[in-house]
Length: 120
Image (cartoon, rainbow, N blue to C red):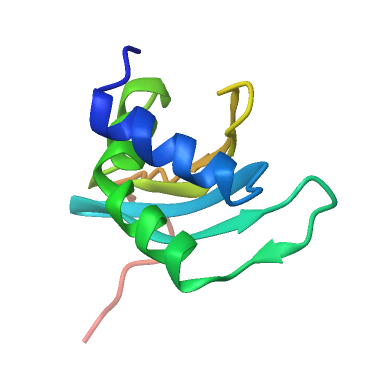
C-alpha cells in the first residue's frame, strides 16, 4: 500500500513524538464499520496521551480505516460484520491484525411427529 504524502507526514509526526506503535480497535456490522479508538505507545509500552498525538491519530482515522479494509480478508463492515484490533509499528510500518469475524447461520426445520392420534 502506497502512503499519501499527508499520511507520511502524520506518521513522521508520531515518530517525532516518540510513538513506537499504535493500537487500532475497530468494529463493523450491518452496513457500517468504524475505528472505535486508537492509542499510541512508546517503545517501553507506555501510553502517549498528549493532545498533539491525539490530533494526529484523529487525522489518520481514514488511513487506518483503509489500511484495515485493504488487509482484512473478510467483509468486516457488512451483514454480521467483524471486529478486532490491529497494531501498527510506526517505525517499520508493519501491521499485525487480530480479527474476529461474526457469522450468522440460519436453520429451518420441518418435523413430523409420530405418535398416537389426537381424538377430540
